[in-house]
Length: 344
Image 1 (cartoon, rainbow, N blue to C red):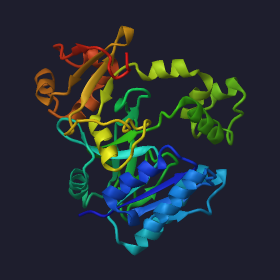
Image 2: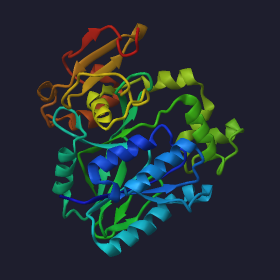
Image 3: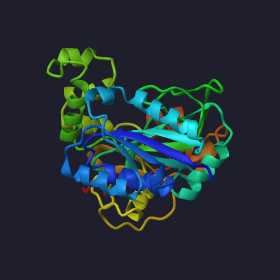
Image 4: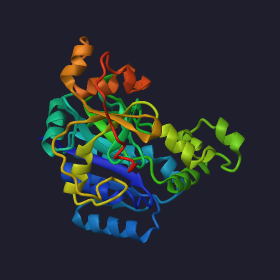
């Protein structure tokens, strides 16, 4: 079985940290997790760090300045270089605290240890850097609701890291050029309650730009530029924009969180569910808060896309997903139903 190490920097991620550690400890073991704490002050977060440090997670607390956050890729490279001298692992995942690894199956996404390790085992011997794309971003107020984003994240095999950018979007290998695509996917729990999202955006952007100057924010294109729009809009417009386009509901993520003991409204795991398996639902939010919903069927997908593999990953990557699910299939697959997800 491949040994996978995880490295992450966080500060006061009270919503995410406990679930993040449980998820990666379940997959890879506490001893394979290293967390840089970037100056947390929240008592709940400090307690979580102490608890998991006792369980075997490595916690580094000395990198607690904002400059350390903006140079986290350099700190990560130093740790990975040290691990490389030990030679006792196979892959390293540079992560953010809102990223939860899954693997695409034929019909959806699995979070089982066996499925994820099977894919890592299949990658043993690969010397190129490895890609995870697309990512799935959570949709507030829709339990297990996600929106596909054609964002690339990367990781590497042991003793191959050449360069690592701040966002881990384009890591390169010193052993072989190029990237190999994988079947992994990140559930990106990025969309926190809007006030908290804006608070974190202000803290991270203030180092680079005057966050009180809307013109400067609009023009800003440096590190963390993806956070600027949160400070230039309101909550209602933000939510409406998130619900446009191609949406998915992935109940297996809720089931997984519940199995890990996470009972959280943010993860949608605070209520009892009866879902089993890894099937994914395709969602399209119409007028009057109605949802068109259909379980993804790989055979129907293949019938209408004969040049495409009969897999959920193929659907996720398809260009037609960018145009909304109304254009995904040449024949309608939707079942029109009352919007129970939004409680209306």
